Length: 492
Ligand SMILES: Cc1cc2nc3c(=O)[nH]c(=O)nc-3n(C[C@H](O)[C@H](O)[C@H](O)COP(=O)(O)OP(=O)(O)OC[C@H]3O[C@@H](n4cnc5c(N)ncnc54)[C@H](O)[C@@H]3O)c2cc1C
Ligand code: SF4
View 1 (cartoon, rainbow, N blue to C red):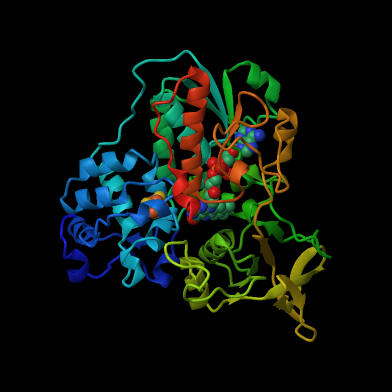
View 2 (tube, rainbow, N blue to C red):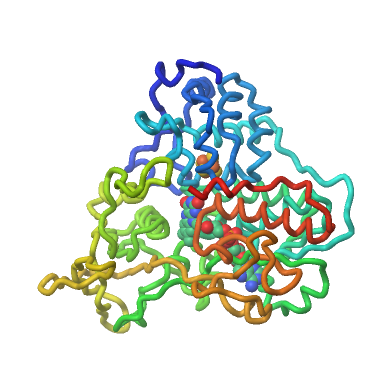
Protein backbone atom coordinates (compact mmCIF):
# COMPACT_ATOMS: atom_id res chain seq x y z
CA UNK A 1 0.00 0.00 0.00
CA UNK A 2 1.83 3.05 -1.30
CA UNK A 3 0.02 5.85 0.49
CA UNK A 4 -2.01 4.91 3.61
CA UNK A 5 -3.94 8.21 3.39
CA UNK A 6 -4.37 8.17 -0.41
CA UNK A 7 -8.09 7.33 -0.24
CA UNK A 8 -8.64 10.31 2.10
CA UNK A 9 -6.55 12.79 0.12
CA UNK A 10 -7.74 12.01 -3.42
CA UNK A 11 -11.19 11.72 -4.97
CA UNK A 12 -11.97 9.36 -7.85
CA UNK A 13 -10.98 10.74 -11.28
CA UNK A 14 -11.66 8.38 -14.17
CA UNK A 15 -10.99 8.74 -17.90
CA UNK A 16 -13.15 11.40 -19.53
CA UNK A 17 -15.63 10.77 -22.30
CA UNK A 18 -15.60 13.18 -25.24
CA UNK A 19 -18.74 15.35 -25.44
CA UNK A 20 -21.63 13.61 -27.22
CA UNK A 21 -21.67 15.86 -30.28
CA UNK A 22 -17.92 15.36 -30.79
CA UNK A 23 -17.90 11.60 -30.37
CA UNK A 24 -20.87 11.06 -32.68
CA UNK A 25 -18.77 12.45 -35.54
CA UNK A 26 -16.46 9.43 -35.62
CA UNK A 27 -16.14 5.71 -34.89
CA UNK A 28 -12.87 5.83 -32.95
CA UNK A 29 -12.70 5.14 -29.19
CA UNK A 30 -14.15 8.15 -27.45
CA UNK A 31 -12.25 8.41 -24.15
CA UNK A 32 -9.52 10.83 -23.16
CA UNK A 33 -7.18 9.09 -20.72
CA UNK A 34 -5.49 10.91 -17.82
CA UNK A 35 -1.73 11.41 -17.71
CA UNK A 36 0.57 8.81 -16.14
CA UNK A 37 1.00 11.03 -13.04
CA UNK A 38 -2.76 11.28 -12.56
CA UNK A 39 -3.15 7.51 -12.87
CA UNK A 40 -0.48 7.06 -10.18
CA UNK A 41 -2.44 9.40 -7.91
CA UNK A 42 -5.57 7.33 -8.50
CA UNK A 43 -3.65 4.14 -7.65
CA UNK A 44 -2.80 5.74 -4.28
CA UNK A 45 -6.51 5.40 -3.38
CA UNK A 46 -6.21 1.58 -3.13
CA UNK A 47 -6.35 0.59 0.56
CA UNK A 48 -4.64 -2.80 0.03
CA UNK A 49 -7.38 -4.41 2.10
CA UNK A 50 -6.63 -7.49 4.20
CA UNK A 51 -9.29 -9.34 2.20
CA UNK A 52 -9.15 -7.95 -1.36
CA UNK A 53 -12.82 -8.25 -2.27
CA UNK A 54 -12.08 -6.58 -5.63
CA UNK A 55 -10.20 -9.75 -6.63
CA UNK A 56 -13.17 -11.93 -5.79
CA UNK A 57 -15.32 -9.67 -8.00
CA UNK A 58 -13.00 -10.23 -10.98
CA UNK A 59 -13.71 -13.50 -12.86
CA UNK A 60 -9.99 -13.75 -13.60
CA UNK A 61 -8.92 -13.20 -10.00
CA UNK A 62 -6.70 -10.35 -11.23
CA UNK A 63 -4.04 -9.37 -8.64
CA UNK A 64 -5.54 -5.90 -8.29
CA UNK A 65 -3.97 -4.53 -5.05
CA UNK A 66 -0.56 -5.77 -6.25
CA UNK A 67 -0.63 -3.86 -9.54
CA UNK A 68 -2.33 -0.83 -7.97
CA UNK A 69 0.69 -0.53 -5.68
CA UNK A 70 3.17 -1.01 -8.55
CA UNK A 71 1.38 1.69 -10.55
CA UNK A 72 1.54 4.06 -7.57
CA UNK A 73 5.32 3.45 -7.39
CA UNK A 74 5.73 3.90 -11.17
CA UNK A 75 6.95 0.29 -11.57
CA UNK A 76 4.97 -0.21 -14.77
CA UNK A 77 6.90 -3.16 -16.17
CA UNK A 78 6.41 -5.18 -12.98
CA UNK A 79 2.75 -4.13 -12.97
CA UNK A 80 2.41 -5.49 -16.51
CA UNK A 81 3.92 -8.80 -15.43
CA UNK A 82 1.47 -9.06 -12.53
CA UNK A 83 -1.43 -8.19 -14.83
CA UNK A 84 -0.48 -10.74 -17.49
CA UNK A 85 -0.10 -13.40 -14.79
CA UNK A 86 -3.90 -13.74 -14.69
CA UNK A 87 -5.18 -11.99 -17.84
CA UNK A 88 -4.02 -12.67 -21.40
CA UNK A 89 -5.72 -9.62 -22.90
CA UNK A 90 -6.04 -6.72 -20.41
CA UNK A 91 -6.35 -4.18 -23.24
CA UNK A 92 -9.75 -5.75 -24.05
CA UNK A 93 -11.08 -6.03 -20.49
CA UNK A 94 -9.57 -2.64 -19.61
CA UNK A 95 -11.87 -1.17 -22.26
CA UNK A 96 -15.05 -3.26 -22.36
CA UNK A 97 -15.34 -5.01 -18.99
CA UNK A 98 -18.22 -3.75 -16.85
CA UNK A 99 -15.72 -3.95 -13.97
CA UNK A 100 -17.46 -6.12 -11.37
CA UNK A 101 -14.21 -5.66 -9.39
CA UNK A 102 -15.15 -2.03 -8.78
CA UNK A 103 -18.58 -2.93 -7.40
CA UNK A 104 -16.74 -5.23 -4.93
CA UNK A 105 -14.12 -2.62 -3.94
CA UNK A 106 -14.14 -2.00 -0.16
CA UNK A 107 -13.68 1.74 -0.66
CA UNK A 108 -16.84 1.60 -2.77
CA UNK A 109 -18.95 0.85 0.32
CA UNK A 110 -19.05 4.52 1.27
CA UNK A 111 -16.89 6.35 -1.31
CA UNK A 112 -16.50 6.10 -5.08
CA UNK A 113 -14.54 2.88 -5.81
CA UNK A 114 -10.90 2.75 -6.88
CA UNK A 115 -10.50 3.22 -10.68
CA UNK A 116 -9.29 -0.37 -11.14
CA UNK A 117 -10.21 -0.64 -14.82
CA UNK A 118 -8.36 2.61 -15.58
CA UNK A 119 -5.18 1.21 -14.00
CA UNK A 120 -5.55 -2.02 -15.94
CA UNK A 121 -5.81 -0.31 -19.32
CA UNK A 122 -3.06 2.21 -18.47
CA UNK A 123 -0.63 -0.60 -17.58
CA UNK A 124 -1.20 -2.61 -20.74
CA UNK A 125 -1.26 0.42 -23.05
CA UNK A 126 2.08 1.51 -21.61
CA UNK A 127 3.36 -2.05 -22.13
CA UNK A 128 2.52 -1.85 -25.85
CA UNK A 129 3.88 1.71 -26.18
CA UNK A 130 7.17 0.70 -24.60
CA UNK A 131 7.46 -2.47 -26.69
CA UNK A 132 7.42 -4.71 -23.62
CA UNK A 133 4.74 -7.01 -25.03
CA UNK A 134 6.39 -9.46 -27.38
CA UNK A 135 5.73 -12.92 -28.74
CA UNK A 136 6.64 -15.62 -26.21
CA UNK A 137 6.99 -18.89 -28.14
CA UNK A 138 7.47 -22.01 -26.01
CA UNK A 139 10.99 -23.30 -25.48
CA UNK A 140 9.93 -26.90 -26.18
CA UNK A 141 7.11 -28.63 -28.05
CA UNK A 142 5.18 -31.52 -26.50
CA UNK A 143 4.28 -33.20 -29.78
CA UNK A 144 0.55 -32.98 -28.95
CA UNK A 145 -1.93 -31.27 -31.30
CA UNK A 146 -4.98 -29.32 -30.15
CA UNK A 147 -7.75 -27.92 -32.35
CA UNK A 148 -9.71 -24.95 -31.06
CA UNK A 149 -13.00 -24.14 -32.79
CA UNK A 150 -13.78 -20.43 -32.57
CA UNK A 151 -11.43 -17.48 -32.14
CA UNK A 152 -13.36 -15.28 -29.68
CA UNK A 153 -11.75 -14.31 -26.36
CA UNK A 154 -12.31 -17.84 -24.97
CA UNK A 155 -10.63 -19.54 -27.95
CA UNK A 156 -7.78 -17.02 -28.06
CA UNK A 157 -6.99 -17.23 -24.34
CA UNK A 158 -7.10 -21.03 -24.48
CA UNK A 159 -4.85 -21.04 -27.56
CA UNK A 160 -2.23 -18.81 -25.95
CA UNK A 161 -2.13 -20.83 -22.72
CA UNK A 162 -1.90 -24.22 -24.46
CA UNK A 163 0.72 -22.96 -26.90
CA UNK A 164 2.81 -21.64 -24.03
CA UNK A 165 2.57 -25.10 -22.45
CA UNK A 166 4.24 -26.41 -25.61
CA UNK A 167 1.29 -27.95 -27.47
CA UNK A 168 0.76 -27.34 -31.18
CA UNK A 169 -2.44 -25.29 -31.50
CA UNK A 170 -4.58 -24.64 -34.56
CA UNK A 171 -7.60 -22.29 -34.30
CA UNK A 172 -10.44 -22.87 -36.77
CA UNK A 173 -12.59 -19.81 -37.44
CA UNK A 174 -15.63 -19.67 -39.71
CA UNK A 175 -15.27 -15.95 -40.23
CA UNK A 176 -12.61 -14.20 -42.31
CA UNK A 177 -10.92 -12.64 -39.26
CA UNK A 178 -10.14 -13.83 -35.75
CA UNK A 179 -11.47 -12.25 -32.56
CA UNK A 180 -15.13 -13.38 -32.45
CA UNK A 181 -17.31 -10.69 -30.92
CA UNK A 182 -14.21 -8.63 -30.09
CA UNK A 183 -13.79 -8.15 -33.84
CA UNK A 184 -17.31 -8.34 -35.28
CA UNK A 185 -19.68 -7.62 -32.36
CA UNK A 186 -18.33 -4.94 -30.03
CA UNK A 187 -18.25 -1.63 -31.95
CA UNK A 188 -15.01 0.01 -32.98
CA UNK A 189 -15.76 3.06 -30.81
CA UNK A 190 -15.61 0.81 -27.71
CA UNK A 191 -12.67 -1.34 -28.85
CA UNK A 192 -10.63 -0.42 -31.91
CA UNK A 193 -10.04 -3.40 -34.14
CA UNK A 194 -6.32 -2.77 -34.63
CA UNK A 195 -5.99 -3.61 -30.91
CA UNK A 196 -7.61 -7.02 -31.55
CA UNK A 197 -5.47 -7.67 -34.63
CA UNK A 198 -2.32 -6.76 -32.70
CA UNK A 199 -2.96 -9.66 -30.29
CA UNK A 200 -3.78 -12.09 -33.10
CA UNK A 201 -0.44 -11.14 -34.69
CA UNK A 202 1.27 -11.85 -31.36
CA UNK A 203 -0.41 -15.26 -31.09
CA UNK A 204 0.61 -16.11 -34.64
CA UNK A 205 4.19 -15.05 -33.92
CA UNK A 206 4.13 -17.41 -30.90
CA UNK A 207 3.41 -20.30 -33.26
CA UNK A 208 -0.39 -20.62 -33.19
CA UNK A 209 -1.94 -21.44 -36.56
CA UNK A 210 -5.21 -19.82 -37.69
CA UNK A 211 -7.49 -21.30 -40.38
CA UNK A 212 -10.06 -18.76 -41.54
CA UNK A 213 -13.36 -19.17 -43.41
CA UNK A 214 -13.55 -22.72 -42.05
CA UNK A 215 -16.83 -23.56 -40.32
CA UNK A 216 -16.27 -26.83 -38.50
CA UNK A 217 -19.35 -28.99 -39.04
CA UNK A 218 -19.94 -27.54 -42.52
CA UNK A 219 -16.65 -26.83 -44.33
CA UNK A 220 -14.78 -29.39 -42.26
CA UNK A 221 -16.56 -32.43 -40.75
CA UNK A 222 -16.09 -32.62 -36.98
CA UNK A 223 -14.91 -36.27 -37.08
CA UNK A 224 -12.17 -35.43 -39.57
CA UNK A 225 -10.89 -32.70 -37.27
CA UNK A 226 -11.12 -34.87 -34.16
CA UNK A 227 -9.15 -37.75 -35.62
CA UNK A 228 -6.37 -35.38 -36.72
CA UNK A 229 -5.55 -34.10 -33.24
CA UNK A 230 -5.19 -35.13 -29.57
CA UNK A 231 -7.86 -32.82 -28.11
CA UNK A 232 -10.55 -30.44 -29.35
CA UNK A 233 -11.86 -27.33 -27.60
CA UNK A 234 -15.22 -25.93 -28.71
CA UNK A 235 -15.34 -22.15 -28.18
CA UNK A 236 -17.99 -21.18 -30.69
CA UNK A 237 -19.89 -18.59 -28.64
CA UNK A 238 -23.68 -18.34 -28.24
CA UNK A 239 -24.66 -17.05 -31.66
CA UNK A 240 -28.34 -18.03 -31.97
CA UNK A 241 -30.32 -14.78 -31.70
CA UNK A 242 -33.71 -14.65 -29.97
CA UNK A 243 -36.34 -13.71 -32.59
CA UNK A 244 -39.63 -11.79 -32.32
CA UNK A 245 -41.94 -13.88 -34.50
CA UNK A 246 -44.83 -11.41 -34.77
CA UNK A 247 -47.05 -10.51 -37.73
CA UNK A 248 -44.93 -8.61 -40.25
CA UNK A 249 -41.58 -10.04 -39.11
CA UNK A 250 -40.75 -10.89 -42.76
CA UNK A 251 -40.79 -7.20 -43.78
CA UNK A 252 -37.63 -5.71 -45.19
CA UNK A 253 -35.86 -3.46 -42.67
CA UNK A 254 -36.17 -5.73 -39.60
CA UNK A 255 -32.81 -7.23 -38.70
CA UNK A 256 -31.01 -9.00 -35.91
CA UNK A 257 -28.39 -6.83 -34.17
CA UNK A 258 -25.66 -9.20 -35.27
CA UNK A 259 -26.61 -8.76 -38.92
CA UNK A 260 -26.16 -4.99 -38.49
CA UNK A 261 -23.18 -4.49 -36.14
CA UNK A 262 -20.49 -6.54 -37.94
CA UNK A 263 -21.05 -4.53 -41.12
CA UNK A 264 -19.92 -1.28 -39.49
CA UNK A 265 -16.94 -3.06 -37.92
CA UNK A 266 -15.95 -4.30 -41.38
CA UNK A 267 -16.08 -0.73 -42.67
CA UNK A 268 -13.92 0.37 -39.73
CA UNK A 269 -11.45 -2.40 -40.65
CA UNK A 270 -11.22 -0.85 -44.13
CA UNK A 271 -13.28 -3.49 -46.00
CA UNK A 272 -15.00 -2.40 -49.20
CA UNK A 273 -17.77 -5.01 -48.88
CA UNK A 274 -19.45 -4.61 -45.47
CA UNK A 275 -22.21 -7.11 -46.30
CA UNK A 276 -19.81 -9.96 -47.10
CA UNK A 277 -20.86 -11.96 -44.00
CA UNK A 278 -24.61 -11.31 -44.32
CA UNK A 279 -26.43 -14.51 -45.36
CA UNK A 280 -28.20 -12.65 -48.22
CA UNK A 281 -25.35 -10.23 -48.83
CA UNK A 282 -27.58 -7.31 -47.80
CA UNK A 283 -26.10 -3.98 -46.73
CA UNK A 284 -27.86 -2.51 -43.67
CA UNK A 285 -27.49 1.18 -42.95
CA UNK A 286 -29.26 3.48 -40.49
CA UNK A 287 -28.41 6.66 -42.43
CA UNK A 288 -31.38 9.01 -42.61
CA UNK A 289 -33.74 6.43 -41.06
CA UNK A 290 -35.95 6.37 -37.99
CA UNK A 291 -34.50 3.49 -36.00
CA UNK A 292 -36.11 1.44 -33.26
CA UNK A 293 -33.88 -0.86 -31.23
CA UNK A 294 -35.79 -3.57 -29.37
CA UNK A 295 -33.87 -4.84 -26.33
CA UNK A 296 -32.22 -2.74 -23.66
CA UNK A 297 -29.03 -4.71 -22.99
CA UNK A 298 -25.44 -4.15 -24.12
CA UNK A 299 -26.13 -5.35 -27.66
CA UNK A 300 -29.06 -2.95 -27.97
CA UNK A 301 -26.87 -0.17 -26.65
CA UNK A 302 -24.25 -0.93 -29.33
CA UNK A 303 -26.94 -0.77 -32.03
CA UNK A 304 -27.99 2.66 -30.73
CA UNK A 305 -24.45 4.09 -30.78
CA UNK A 306 -23.72 2.64 -34.21
CA UNK A 307 -27.03 3.86 -35.73
CA UNK A 308 -26.43 7.38 -34.38
CA UNK A 309 -22.90 7.48 -35.80
CA UNK A 310 -24.22 6.30 -39.18
CA UNK A 311 -26.56 9.32 -39.23
CA UNK A 312 -29.96 7.89 -38.21
CA UNK A 313 -32.60 10.62 -38.17
CA UNK A 314 -33.88 9.32 -34.81
CA UNK A 315 -33.28 6.38 -32.47
CA UNK A 316 -35.46 5.02 -29.68
CA UNK A 317 -35.02 1.92 -27.54
CA UNK A 318 -37.66 -0.44 -26.15
CA UNK A 319 -37.18 -2.60 -23.08
CA UNK A 320 -39.72 -5.10 -21.76
CA UNK A 321 -38.33 -5.08 -18.22
CA UNK A 322 -38.87 -2.35 -15.61
CA UNK A 323 -36.22 0.32 -15.11
CA UNK A 324 -33.63 -0.96 -12.59
CA UNK A 325 -33.31 0.88 -9.26
CA UNK A 326 -30.74 3.67 -8.91
CA UNK A 327 -29.30 2.15 -5.73
CA UNK A 328 -28.70 -1.41 -4.59
CA UNK A 329 -31.84 -3.28 -3.45
CA UNK A 330 -31.81 -4.90 0.00
CA UNK A 331 -31.37 -8.37 -1.56
CA UNK A 332 -28.38 -7.22 -3.60
CA UNK A 333 -25.78 -6.17 -1.01
CA UNK A 334 -22.11 -5.30 -1.47
CA UNK A 335 -19.82 -7.04 -2.57
CA UNK A 336 -22.18 -8.60 -5.11
CA UNK A 337 -22.43 -7.22 -8.64
CA UNK A 338 -24.82 -4.27 -8.26
CA UNK A 339 -28.02 -4.66 -10.29
CA UNK A 340 -28.65 -0.94 -10.68
CA UNK A 341 -29.50 1.48 -13.48
CA UNK A 342 -26.44 2.06 -15.68
CA UNK A 343 -26.60 4.66 -18.42
CA UNK A 344 -24.36 3.50 -21.26
CA UNK A 345 -22.53 6.06 -23.39
CA UNK A 346 -24.86 5.16 -26.29
CA UNK A 347 -28.01 5.77 -24.25
CA UNK A 348 -26.57 9.11 -23.18
CA UNK A 349 -25.98 9.92 -26.87
CA UNK A 350 -29.50 8.86 -27.79
CA UNK A 351 -31.00 11.10 -25.11
CA UNK A 352 -28.99 14.11 -26.29
CA UNK A 353 -30.27 13.43 -29.82
CA UNK A 354 -33.88 13.36 -28.63
CA UNK A 355 -34.51 9.63 -28.16
CA UNK A 356 -35.01 7.61 -24.99
CA UNK A 357 -35.29 4.14 -23.46
CA UNK A 358 -38.94 3.13 -23.05
CA UNK A 359 -39.24 0.59 -20.25
CA UNK A 360 -42.12 -1.87 -19.71
CA UNK A 361 -43.00 -1.81 -23.39
CA UNK A 362 -43.90 -4.83 -25.52
CA UNK A 363 -43.96 -4.93 -29.30
CA UNK A 364 -47.21 -6.46 -30.57
CA UNK A 365 -46.73 -6.33 -34.36
CA UNK A 366 -44.79 -4.87 -37.27
CA UNK A 367 -46.39 -2.60 -39.89
CA UNK A 368 -45.25 -2.23 -43.50
CA UNK A 369 -45.93 -1.10 -47.03
CA UNK A 370 -44.55 -2.57 -50.28
CA UNK A 371 -42.82 -5.29 -48.23
CA UNK A 372 -40.82 -2.70 -46.26
CA UNK A 373 -41.23 -1.97 -42.57
CA UNK A 374 -42.80 1.42 -41.84
CA UNK A 375 -43.37 1.07 -38.12
CA UNK A 376 -44.55 -1.12 -35.29
CA UNK A 377 -47.22 -1.38 -32.61
CA UNK A 378 -46.56 -1.52 -28.90
CA UNK A 379 -48.41 -1.73 -25.60
CA UNK A 380 -47.29 -0.92 -22.06
CA UNK A 381 -46.99 -3.86 -19.69
CA UNK A 382 -47.51 -4.42 -15.99
CA UNK A 383 -45.26 -7.02 -14.33
CA UNK A 384 -47.16 -9.49 -12.13
CA UNK A 385 -45.80 -12.75 -10.70
CA UNK A 386 -42.74 -12.43 -12.89
CA UNK A 387 -44.77 -12.12 -16.14
CA UNK A 388 -45.54 -9.07 -18.31
CA UNK A 389 -49.25 -8.28 -18.91
CA UNK A 390 -50.15 -5.79 -21.68
CA UNK A 391 -52.24 -2.89 -20.32
CA UNK A 392 -55.40 -2.24 -22.31
CA UNK A 393 -55.69 1.22 -23.84
CA UNK A 394 -51.90 1.80 -23.97
CA UNK A 395 -51.50 0.65 -27.60
CA UNK A 396 -49.32 2.94 -29.69
CA UNK A 397 -47.93 3.06 -33.24
CA UNK A 398 -44.31 4.10 -33.86
CA UNK A 399 -42.83 4.96 -37.25
CA UNK A 400 -39.56 3.33 -38.30
CA UNK A 401 -37.65 2.40 -41.42
CA UNK A 402 -35.14 0.23 -39.55
CA UNK A 403 -35.91 -2.09 -36.63
CA UNK A 404 -33.04 -3.85 -34.87
CA UNK A 405 -33.68 -6.90 -32.69
CA UNK A 406 -31.32 -7.15 -29.72
CA UNK A 407 -33.23 -9.64 -27.59
CA UNK A 408 -30.37 -11.78 -26.40
CA UNK A 409 -28.98 -15.12 -27.55
CA UNK A 410 -30.32 -18.64 -27.11
CA UNK A 411 -27.07 -20.60 -27.17
CA UNK A 412 -24.58 -21.98 -29.69
CA UNK A 413 -25.46 -22.87 -33.29
CA UNK A 414 -26.50 -26.52 -33.38
CA UNK A 415 -24.95 -28.06 -36.57
CA UNK A 416 -21.52 -28.58 -35.04
CA UNK A 417 -22.92 -29.87 -31.74
CA UNK A 418 -25.07 -32.41 -33.55
CA UNK A 419 -22.01 -33.73 -35.42
CA UNK A 420 -19.95 -33.76 -32.23
CA UNK A 421 -22.70 -35.49 -30.24
CA UNK A 422 -21.87 -33.68 -26.99
CA UNK A 423 -24.61 -33.27 -24.40
CA UNK A 424 -26.37 -29.90 -24.00
CA UNK A 425 -28.73 -28.59 -21.31
CA UNK A 426 -32.21 -26.95 -21.51
CA UNK A 427 -30.58 -23.64 -22.45
CA UNK A 428 -28.85 -25.56 -25.31
CA UNK A 429 -25.42 -24.70 -23.90
CA UNK A 430 -22.75 -27.41 -23.81
CA UNK A 431 -22.56 -29.47 -20.62
CA UNK A 432 -19.07 -30.13 -19.27
CA UNK A 433 -17.67 -31.78 -16.19
CA UNK A 434 -17.22 -29.06 -13.55
CA UNK A 435 -13.61 -30.04 -12.79
CA UNK A 436 -12.22 -31.32 -16.12
CA UNK A 437 -14.26 -29.08 -18.46
CA UNK A 438 -14.62 -32.11 -20.72
CA UNK A 439 -17.89 -32.57 -22.61
CA UNK A 440 -19.72 -35.90 -22.73
CA UNK A 441 -17.43 -36.79 -25.68
CA UNK A 442 -13.96 -37.91 -24.50
CA UNK A 443 -11.17 -35.55 -25.56
CA UNK A 444 -13.61 -32.76 -26.45
CA UNK A 445 -13.76 -29.70 -24.17
CA UNK A 446 -15.80 -26.49 -24.18
CA UNK A 447 -15.31 -22.91 -22.98
CA UNK A 448 -16.86 -19.46 -23.19
CA UNK A 449 -20.38 -18.46 -24.18
CA UNK A 450 -21.11 -21.85 -25.80
CA UNK A 451 -20.71 -23.37 -22.31
CA UNK A 452 -21.98 -20.65 -19.94
CA UNK A 453 -24.45 -18.88 -22.25
CA UNK A 454 -24.19 -15.26 -23.33
CA UNK A 455 -21.77 -13.58 -20.93
CA UNK A 456 -18.80 -11.21 -20.84
CA UNK A 457 -15.34 -10.94 -22.36
CA UNK A 458 -13.74 -11.31 -18.93
CA UNK A 459 -15.62 -14.57 -18.35
CA UNK A 460 -14.65 -15.85 -21.80
CA UNK A 461 -10.94 -15.23 -21.06
CA UNK A 462 -11.35 -16.85 -17.65
CA UNK A 463 -13.01 -19.92 -19.23
CA UNK A 464 -10.36 -20.08 -21.95
CA UNK A 465 -7.56 -20.08 -19.38
CA UNK A 466 -9.23 -22.70 -17.21
CA UNK A 467 -10.07 -25.09 -20.06
CA UNK A 468 -6.45 -24.82 -21.27
CA UNK A 469 -5.25 -26.01 -17.87
CA UNK A 470 -7.68 -28.95 -18.01
CA UNK A 471 -6.64 -29.88 -21.57
CA UNK A 472 -2.97 -29.71 -20.55
CA UNK A 473 -3.65 -32.18 -17.71
CA UNK A 474 -5.57 -34.46 -20.09
CA UNK A 475 -2.72 -34.42 -22.62
CA UNK A 476 0.15 -34.90 -20.20
CA UNK A 477 -1.54 -37.02 -17.53
CA UNK A 478 0.15 -34.80 -14.91
CA UNK A 479 -0.93 -31.77 -12.87
CA UNK A 480 -0.67 -28.74 -15.15
CA UNK A 481 1.79 -25.94 -14.53
CA UNK A 482 -0.65 -23.51 -16.14
CA UNK A 483 -2.23 -21.31 -13.44
CA UNK A 484 -5.66 -22.20 -12.11
CA UNK A 485 -8.47 -19.64 -12.26
CA UNK A 486 -9.75 -19.33 -8.70
CA UNK A 487 -13.51 -19.36 -9.28
CA UNK A 488 -14.56 -20.50 -5.81
CA UNK A 489 -14.45 -16.83 -4.88
CA UNK A 490 -17.84 -16.55 -6.60
CA UNK A 491 -19.65 -18.71 -4.09
CA UNK A 492 -20.93 -15.87 -1.93
C1 LIG B 1 -22.91 -6.79 -29.69
C2 LIG B 1 -22.24 -7.34 -28.46
C3 LIG B 1 -21.55 -6.47 -27.64
C4 LIG B 1 -20.92 -6.95 -26.49
N1 LIG B 1 -20.27 -6.07 -25.70
C5 LIG B 1 -19.61 -6.52 -24.61
C6 LIG B 1 -18.89 -5.63 -23.77
O1 LIG B 1 -18.88 -4.42 -24.01
N2 LIG B 1 -18.21 -6.15 -22.71
C7 LIG B 1 -18.20 -7.48 -22.44
O2 LIG B 1 -17.55 -7.90 -21.49
N3 LIG B 1 -18.90 -8.36 -23.20
C8 LIG B 1 -19.60 -7.91 -24.28
N4 LIG B 1 -20.30 -8.79 -25.06
C9 LIG B 1 -20.24 -10.24 -24.74
C10 LIG B 1 -18.89 -10.83 -25.20
O3 LIG B 1 -18.51 -10.31 -26.45
C11 LIG B 1 -18.98 -12.36 -25.25
O4 LIG B 1 -19.39 -12.82 -23.98
C12 LIG B 1 -17.64 -12.99 -25.61
O5 LIG B 1 -17.15 -12.50 -26.84
C13 LIG B 1 -17.78 -14.51 -25.70
O6 LIG B 1 -16.57 -15.04 -26.12
P1 LIG B 1 -16.49 -16.48 -26.81
O7 LIG B 1 -15.06 -16.66 -27.17
O8 LIG B 1 -17.14 -17.48 -25.97
O9 LIG B 1 -17.38 -16.37 -28.15
P2 LIG B 1 -17.40 -15.38 -29.37
O10 LIG B 1 -16.74 -14.09 -29.09
O11 LIG B 1 -18.83 -15.34 -29.81
O12 LIG B 1 -16.54 -16.12 -30.48
C14 LIG B 1 -16.97 -17.34 -31.04
C15 LIG B 1 -16.25 -17.52 -32.37
O13 LIG B 1 -16.51 -18.84 -32.86
C16 LIG B 1 -16.70 -18.78 -34.26
N5 LIG B 1 -17.46 -19.96 -34.65
C17 LIG B 1 -18.74 -20.28 -34.32
N6 LIG B 1 -19.08 -21.47 -34.85
C18 LIG B 1 -18.00 -21.92 -35.52
C19 LIG B 1 -17.73 -23.10 -36.28
N7 LIG B 1 -18.66 -24.05 -36.43
N8 LIG B 1 -16.52 -23.25 -36.85
C20 LIG B 1 -15.55 -22.28 -36.71
N9 LIG B 1 -15.76 -21.15 -36.00
C21 LIG B 1 -16.96 -20.97 -35.40
C22 LIG B 1 -17.44 -17.48 -34.46
O14 LIG B 1 -17.36 -17.02 -35.80
C23 LIG B 1 -16.71 -16.57 -33.46
O15 LIG B 1 -15.61 -15.95 -34.07
C24 LIG B 1 -20.97 -8.33 -26.19
C25 LIG B 1 -21.70 -9.20 -27.00
C26 LIG B 1 -22.32 -8.72 -28.14
C27 LIG B 1 -23.11 -9.65 -29.00
S1 SF4 C 1 -10.98 -7.81 -15.89
FE1 SF4 C 1 -12.82 -6.62 -15.35
S2 SF4 C 1 -13.34 -7.34 -13.27
FE2 SF4 C 1 -11.20 -7.95 -13.66
S3 SF4 C 1 -9.90 -6.27 -12.86
FE3 SF4 C 1 -10.28 -5.85 -15.04
S4 SF4 C 1 -12.07 -4.50 -15.07
FE4 SF4 C 1 -12.01 -5.49 -13.07
